[in-house]
Image (cartoon, rainbow, N blue to C red; front, side, top):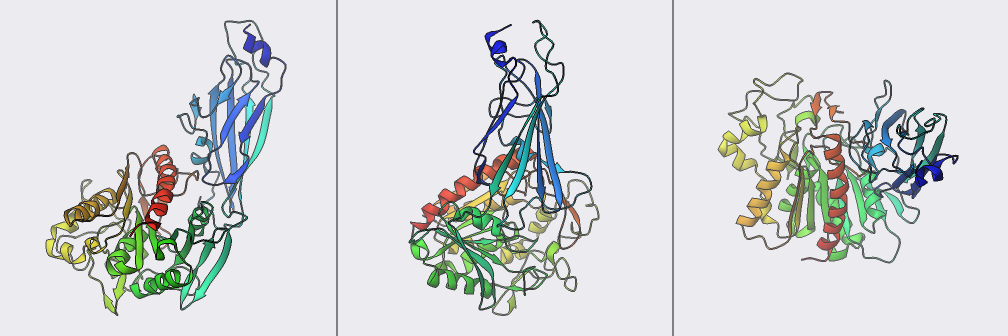
Length: 453
């Protein structure tokens, strides 16, 4: 028996997580020690998210010292198969018949995850004497991932018709500041704003539909609403650089680019997650009275031209649960063949002189965010744009590039407004890596943008 086997013999299995408590974005080190050398050790994670239980499980091969390091060792069985200490967090799936989302609903409540390691009975090196793992050993640790840091001040915004929440870091400021916008699910993205604030970035999470006192639909949302929000932030919240960076997800990414091109003097920079390069119709978040190809945005009381407005080349739509006419049909490709309408509905991002970042997934199945991001970057370059241009385009990632270390397995979805089934695309590991990497790089981008212009 090896020296490592002697060291492990008779000692209880030990699961260690470091740090046990910290922000959601923080990686943890997860290590199992004192296992039977060469044995199999199964580690399970369980998290209660709202009213739904989420769990993941993976089995590892202990080394000759009886050690498993999740950042070093890929599982030999289980819900994911890559060396990653956060794998048991992002590979979680709903248990039973649960339907709740993975995104945190209340930033004041931390996510609590129970990790449990157990020895698999009888396993261990077969070429040495010994009975193998006993199969009764286990070790558990509770991990806390918090959204809202103790030193971040959260205040609700309910003025001038605006609905949102401000997250201000501790200190005198001024701080790099970002206006955070949700996508076609609506609501207020307080979770992302709270995580930015934990990094020293002042964040304002702004609702614009499906939020208290606002319309339940995206249809005919006036851009003046966001102009008022920018004026409030820029004049009263003391953003570094004098203006806020605008950052949104999906429809919020489209909106971020649209705001920068419409109110360029009021925006410091743009970080658009999985955006569109055109003004689109209301689509899946539409008021049923208007339908899928009704307008999403207005300015000065006039409906903005959009790509679905009597598009001559579009004879079907993907938001009614009907299959496309052929497996190669893509409504976003078909729509561009109506060249005059495409030109009229294109977001003129070249009007904006500040820093622009686009974050996209090459396997985005909700809409072609990679193509849109490339169009944005190309337009800026051709028009002599001098500020920073950053395009993060992730292989194996889809539309669900979200906060780090949340479950990335929720790929097939039901739209919260229309009830239509759709796919975000990507793979769980691809989405997880894109979410973690983009959060770090966008935080750095916001800080750089705050010192520009």
